[in-house]
Structures are given as structure tokens and as C-alpha cells.
Image (tube, rainbow, N blue to C red; front, side, top):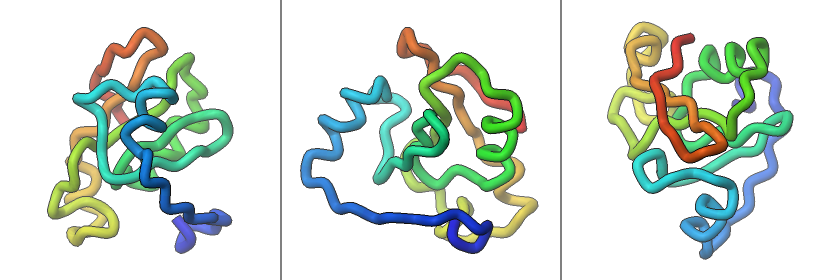
Length: 102
């Protein structure tokens, strides 16, 4: 995210699982880390294009997630073409997880 001009403050939280639960991230959307961006939660290795679409569309949602740590996700390898094909999910306030198009 720093490569895209975002100011990043990293905090190691040994209670990450509890924090994800408190933020409304259901287990099927859980991942290795989360970020807070303009009122949304971004969970995992979410492509910058998906975050940009989230911020542009401003859906009534908790945020977005790329569960687990896919090998070809941002920060894990791949490139813009593999990132564009990742399954990104929108997390609803009711805990529902649905595909997020970006």
C-alpha cells in the first residue's frame, strides 16, 4: 500500500482473531492481517484496484477480504493480471460474504 501512496502504520496484535471478530469479519473471510481505510476493513492481500473500487463505490459494508494468503496475491507474488483474477469478497454488516467485482 505504501507503493500506492498510503501512509501505513503496522501494529502487531497478538489478539488478531478477536480483533477480526470485533470488526465483523466472519471466519470464512479471515486472513493474516487487516487494515483500516476510510471507515472500511481490508482483510488480507487485497489488490489496490479492489480497494480503490471500494472507496469509490462506498458500499454499506464492513469491508473487503481476500481470505487466506493466495500465492499470486499482492505481496505474495503475481502481477496485475493475476491480482485482477483474485476472488475478493465484500463483507456485509450481517456477516454475509459475497463476491466483490472490481
